[in-house]
Length: 280
Image (cartoon, rainbow, N blue to C red):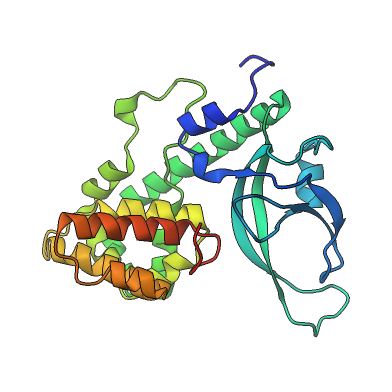
C-alpha cells in the first residue's frame, strides 16, 4: 500500500462505512471533563447534540495526531459506545454516562490509513473466528436462546460478522459469505434465537452499529416452522422494546410490503441512534 494513500470520504462510503462518519462542529478540544475531572478529548459534531469523548490513552497508544487546524466541517471516522464512569475523586458520586469513541480515525493522513488498515485486518480475524464459532455451535442455539448468557454469547458472534474491506485482495467474493448467506445457511438454528423473548433487550444493549448489523442479519432468517409470521413478530417485539411510540406504531399490525418497508426505515433510524428513543 502506498505511503501516500489516505482515508477519504469517497473510500469510506465505498467501503460501506459512511454511517461511522461524523462532521466536526468545532475543533477537537483536549480538556478536563466537567463532572469526572479527567482529561479527555471532546468531539462536537453536526450530527449529534451530545459531545463524544475520546480517551487520552487511546490517542497516545495509537499515536493519533489531533491536528489543531482540523475543525468545523472536517470529518472523522468513529465507532461509538456508551460507558458509565465513576468519578475518581468521589467513589460515592453517581456514575456518569458518556458517549465514547471506541475507535477513532482522522481523514487525510497516510498514517491513519495504515492504522485503519491494521484495524480492519483485526476485525476480519474476529469475523472469521465468529463464523467458525457459529459453524461449530449452531446446533445448540435453540437451547442457548433460553438463557441470557446463551443469548449474549450468540450475539457476540453475530455482532462480529460484517463485510470489512479486503486490502490484500486475498478473499474472492464467492468465498466470503454475506449477512444474508449466513442467515439463510443457519436459518433453522437462528430462528429460535430471533424468536427468543430475551433477544430484544440483549440486542439493544449493543453499540448502534453492532445492533443494526445483527438486526440486518436476523431479518434474512427464514423460519422453517412459523414462516413469515415469526419475522413480523420479531419486528413488533423489537419495536416494542425500543419503547418509542412512533417505532411501536410503525412495527405493529404489518400487512403489506409498504408497511414492512416503513417498519424497516423506522427501526434502522432507531437502532443507529446513539441513544435509543432519539433520531440518529
